[in-house]
Image 1 (tube, rainbow, N blue to C red):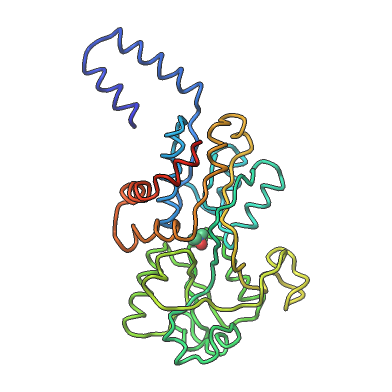
Image 2: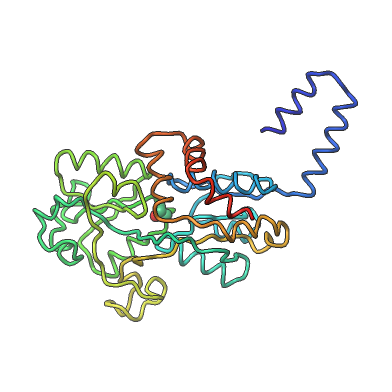
Length: 320
Ligand code: TMO
């Protein structure tokens, strides 16, 4: 976009020699520094963080390009060379998909943020008044009808995230034999809008949520406690409560948040890779990134600028 605009303004000056010269320069730069392709996903901390990571890499001298990308399919896209850098790999959502490509060798596990994550079924605390025994999953299951709608009755309605977040909720409902029907929200905002309405009327609701997120600053609530996560629960049917099905467990508590890169990136842009390995967001960083947009209603670009202004020493240290 920037390049296009500058070419236009040069055309405006009707200076043919300069125009030809600028084309030479542009193609030279393009050759020596191929842009680092960063995906844009559909939750706000990721969008703000992508902008921040991109600006840091630009500060370090690399070119950056943003590409819209399905957050579930992005690890395969990295293997095909369509994406270079995923800076928010959430274990609960994408651990299996990510680790599969790392095992193949086309994605590199570049760094682990300090942030510890949890992605799980969640309810606002007032639901405990009508469903005693929460946050235990069997107690929730016993109260399933409280969450039923005309669409799901007699089963309870669980509002999951968009399907591309790879939560495996349908499989968990099967694996644990739950009386719930999973409805996938179209977007994160659709979940927050339903929560706001339910909260007003103190209506029972159970939906997908995660931490770090802005929700904990606005609503009192808890994650459902499912059987403890164990390595292999999502791809190995044996083991766990159900010996025949996978997903008979909750998501990891204290899950990782990692940075993955395409295997060719370290060689193509070693300077950028050295910076990427130092990038490290805390729980507060990720929560603030989402809060600036979802609560303070800032534009993604402005939120990135604000975080960078407030954390100048932190991110500059990653450049050395
Ligand atoms: C990947 N997410 C934070 C939406 O669970």
